[in-house]
Amino acid sequence: MKNYKLIWLGIFCCLQPLILFAQRGETIRKAFLDPKSDQVLVVAHRGNWRSAPENSVAAIDSAIQMGVDIVEIDIHKTKDGQLILMHDDRVDRTTNGKGLIKDYTLAEIKKLKLKDKDGNLTGHTVPTLEEALLAGKGQIMFNLDKAYSVFDEVYAVLEKTGTASLVIMKGSQPVETVKSEFGDYLDKVIYIPVIGLDGKDGEKKVRDYMTQLHPAAFELVYSDSSNPLPRKVKSMILGKSRIWYNTLWASLAGGHEDDQALKDPDGNYGYLIEELGARILQTDRPGFMLDYLRKKGLHD
Image (cartoon, rainbow, N blue to C red; front, side, top):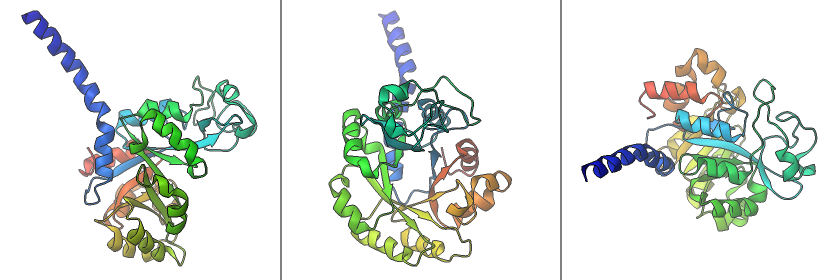
């Protein structure tokens, strides 16, 4: 009997990390929906593409292993109506193929090999949306880009995989359009608006969404560092919804971006967090950003 107890104890000790890892997605979702949390969530743009091809299962796995909270992936539809992961509408840049995705069947796409960040061919293949979702199910949240126009089909895959609660959709349409075109899904997936603050109607769009839809987060974009609206919008949103900024390149957040953060993280990541209230940051350097946030006590 004692031996049996030791065996079961050993099995439990081995399985416990896997169980906790599988619950991580729900923990992230709970944090995402908590507007008062100071934890800064990290979004890996197209997965961790510095260690594996962008929009690949391996890039998603790498992001999960390093502790990323959300992975951004891009959706396209093949000639035979299958949903795959790829940013461009052509296969040329990221695979050894040539031409438009819409001219390929899924079977033909699957014969292609993905390139790494330096353009070298790898053994990785283009994943379907279903394969990507199952690879990260329970371990991470997904932000689906380029999915708005095919969301009926996307949602069928979310239902099939049981991942709808961990998916974030977003768009730049006015709130009235979203309620009209996307209304049936608003209580099934997380939808957040993308609002440009350089235009004259940015503040109005924020107010419209706050009064009519109460989104869990706002993705804010501005290019002019002298623009006063980001600070004003912070006072409107912070504590009611999360604020999302992108540090992928300079024009998305007033010049505050990843490459500059390598030299001055406080002046870039820190500025967006402290001065503009960012509680979600999308990055092309998830490892560097996570190290910075952990040192500041802003991420586990």
